[in-house]
Length: 451
Ligand SMILES: [Zn+2]
Image 1 (cartoon, rainbow, N blue to C red):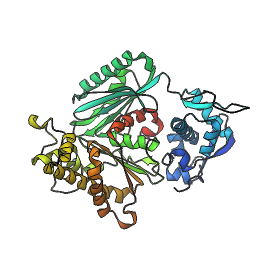
Image 2 (image 1 turned 180 degrees about the vertical axis):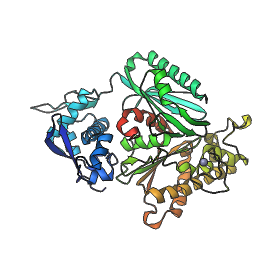
Image 3 (image 1 turned 90 degrees about the vertical axis):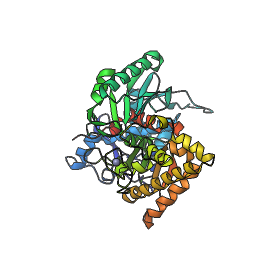
Image 4 (image 1 turned 90 degrees about the horizontal axis):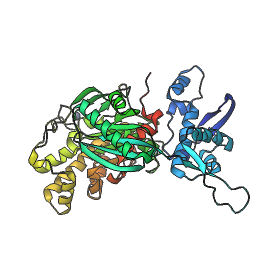
């Protein structure tokens, strides 16, 4: 792993700038991928009044970034002493004290449970303060919605429920609000709800309020965040599912560290959600519509895509595409699945493949091939250190992983061929719901920056 510890930041005390200390942030301390600063921010001194300071002021001060790194370390390493935290961050006890006191004041962290020490001063340990507070996570999919209550680290507190998606935005908002209220009323022990995070199968505008385009829902420019916030009386954050999952991985130590090279997250399900972290930031583009690789053309005369044209990557690898291939008939993503086929799932196909159903094997292998081929374009464009893949299809990764890898390596350019790790995120980890929770728990980095 490359040493990023040389990057320095100012840790400002409560009194402001008069008592500055340097805080070094080695890659290990951030879970490898956790340094949220852009290359620009990392490598340049902050010039007062210059573009760097404007950018920092918008995205949160460097102290805020250090605070989040400290919080993330406590979250993942708890119980942890202040001394160990300082060691992991490569900084002084004094600098850590400032950050930790902030976190304690905000009730994000508490100190307690005296640790084992043979004699002398007994150290106290820092814990995530997830007592009596929670987050509601919602995974809005074209056919079903999934809802779960988590703690502030994204760990489930109340199990997942699911229900059919009402595609009428007004009715859906009313139903979601009712379900959120019901679950919070039924579980008073959850305490305060910090907010509701919703991942959607489409593009969300830069202000994080409207769904610009969700082809499988048939939504165009639908206001969603404010109506749901009004109906629930809670803060609401919405984001594209792929971006939210990438955000969660970026901040999470659940996966292996992605290193400084960035990451790509693929959510293969009804559609193909893609999220990219590069240069320490979620790739958003001008309209927060960047990284929509699912609609990259893979074959111009290929199957019809939900977005309206033919041959997108998504139209080759979505669950519907796999089922279409198995059935030998093109299922139009814009129309409901015929009733006689509606119960057939990719999981069924996988179990048939394991029972040597040749058609099922062929359909899944083709999906894996297209997945790898499309991924090659993403890798050639982004050159990530790590690729996360989630979705139903991953339960057959023993059969499909080598095909994906071969198709990827066949088409990636020589210097980066075979370099990016592919990591499967199992369905049991509920990556989309964790992504939804991350929208609430990492607000400074989840919300698009508005000029
Ligand atoms: Zn498309």
